[in-house]
Length: 155
Length: 155
Image (cartoon, rainbow over all chains, first blue to last red; front, top):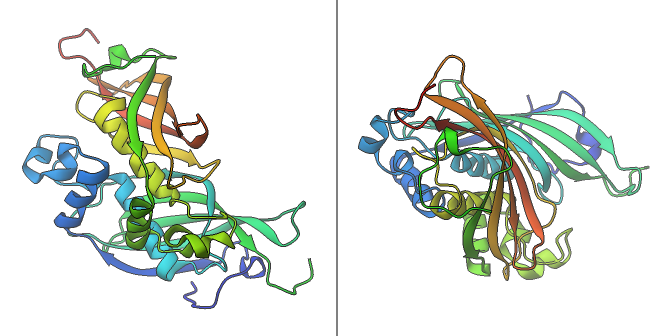
């Protein structure tokens, strides 16, 4: 497990290396504000309305959990040199994010593929779990990102 | 191509059926506001800073494009009875969303799987393209959602 503020280059991305982010405390106001703007469904906006649904209570939009995961990785979890630029990925939400959850992200390098056509970069596959304060997994994502080589490093 | 305001049940989800959403006009202020909150990287917050990056100009966070796609589907594109509840999915961003883009979403039913254990519902796989006003594809997503059977329908 590594927590670093040094920018990460392709050379730093060993398969199996792990990173842990800081924390983000969710609350009902954030859940409702995001939902009103991007996912205006009753179970994301009103606790009483959510009781009678699959969620059984107020739950964050999955895309809100994804957005907070991104924030945690950009600000604390995964300081990739030049930024985190994703090309594609997959995401699953095994359980809903609740108003009382405090989120953090644990990421692991799954695959490193130096580019054949562009010697200054590579593609890195990162698997991330977004967990709450009880260690329960709220989101699992696997994203392919572009990572530059360290300037001056042999290619 | 269908545009409907009738709630959709599992019985309405024929493989190949398509749905088209309304439109959402992006602008620089929205891109920057989302990025400041969820993806604070220079190429999502500052046009000048974005010039020297892979993006070559201000570009929305991919998670912002995903969130707007969700909004368009919830409000106009895919009126699933009981709401759109995703369990998992994948997403790709073949090109960045720009401040001048006007987005809409075209969705297609790819797969319908009635639940064996829960006769009142099924899982439906929806593939969606988020396109701009020139028909350029900004996001492709495939999401598995829970869809209820029509009440009173034979199972």
